[in-house]
Amino acid sequence: MKKYVSPNNTTTRIRLWLELSLYELKFIKVEDSAKLTTDRISRIHAIFQTLTLLLAEKESISTKEWLQKALFYTIELIARILGTNLKECVAELTADLFEESDNPLLSVDPFVRAEIKPIFIKFLQIGIEDLYSQKSEEFGVLENIKQCLKIFDYIEEELEKMSKEVSYLRSPIHDMLVDRTPINDAFKILKNVWNMFQETYFESALESGNIETMKSVCLQLSSEQERIKALTDVLKHA
Picture 1 (cartoon, rainbow, N blue to C red):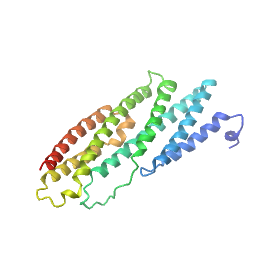
Picture 2 (picture 1 turned 90 degrees about the vertical axis):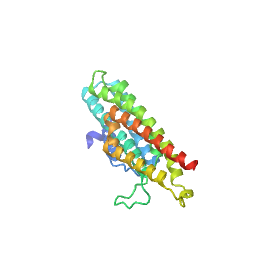
Picture 3 (picture 1 turned 120 degrees about the vertical axis):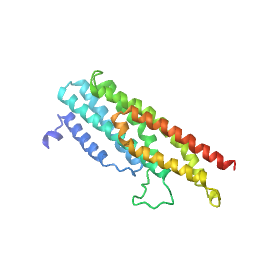
Picture 4 (picture 1 turned 135 degrees about the vertical axis):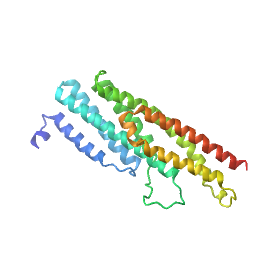
């Protein structure tokens, strides 16, 4: 313990601070607020910036290797938070409100993604610009994650469009509808959307930099969104 609190060992003390912060981040719950999640991630980013500066002043192979591993682990954790948050929002969007379920929906804060994505990009920049060699495997993975994040944005946009259509489908104005075929067909499509997110293990696609999975989800989601829109158009013009 004396080693960690020694005034002459600033790097080691900051490393301990980072380890404790990462431990705290590991146990963030998907239903935690955007503020709580962002505060923890921002603190970790500040620590990484400090360690990177210290490393630049005093080159240390062991410290750099440790920092590389810690950064990669952090990026994986944050990517998982982003992916899981979006998947839980999809669960809520596609849920059949009239169907009983043994797994109650979690109440997630959709603003989590908007708040932590800019910080997540900064973590990627630290890895790509400061810590990893362009020839390293980690560098390639981070580049893939960077590309996946762009596709992630498109997926969010498609879900936002779909959310508007679903809100219309769930409107009380349809309660007395005689022919509910368009609504029933739409909810079959929504069930397919949820199955897709489950079968592709979407929450882990971003952290692994799986570009093909992200592309596949985006394209299929766009197609399903168009099908749902066509059904709501039928209802609007009935």
